[in-house]
Length: 262
Image 1 (cartoon, rainbow, N blue to C red):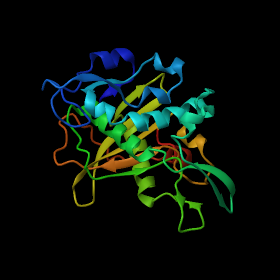
Image 2 (image 1 turned 60 degrees about the vertical axis):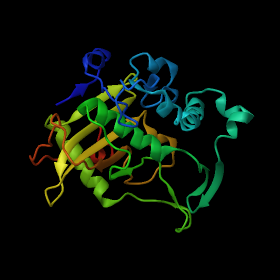
Image 3 (image 1 turned 180 degrees about the horizontal axis):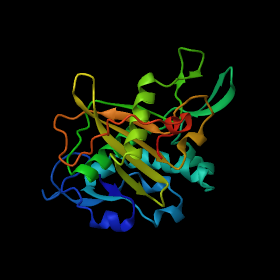
Image 4 (image 1 turned 90 degrees about the vertical axis):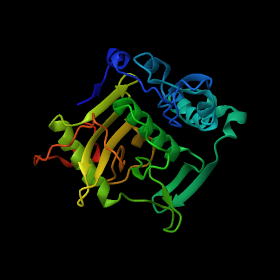
């Protein structure tokens, strides 16, 4: 079981010798810089001290994320009481919409880079925990705690897929039986937990959940809607250090399944 929960844990942990964004070695002569994953702009200044997750990456790879990181920083700065969102120039970087359905009228962001952010976090944590590269085109599935709007169904929120609950139950079992790998950082405002499992046909998959603050609180409440990023991805070769989920039958409360970061 890999456990990176303190700054000293992170400092002692062997860091990837490749750029987790492109997979190529850090020793190829390409200029390098440090990348925060998740981006530090998502966190309150006080929470950046204990402790940030910093990866060495190629400067060019990191620069490709600049605009999306800036969009996320504007959103989170507002949530942390900052003033970026009132800056007219910065406002232009977010596309705001008013969405009306039978639940009311809501403010929505149409260019919020949540999908690429989530998969970037998954790839970063895979590289950190297992020392192997997770390609950008890896088959994966992610449930997002902020609901997406279904434009084909009267602008109602897109509901959970049933597999999300199965993944959440497996993660609860893994945590209760100490058969998971995890990373906590940014004053424990970032939490990532994963475990390895098998499809019915025997193929391996990694099941994960992570959260940044309590992300679901930034959106409308939906009954029985999973409140963390939850999903899975598949790899050709399972990392040697992977922790496999226990096969014990364990009971979980509904509250635990809806927020499977115990």
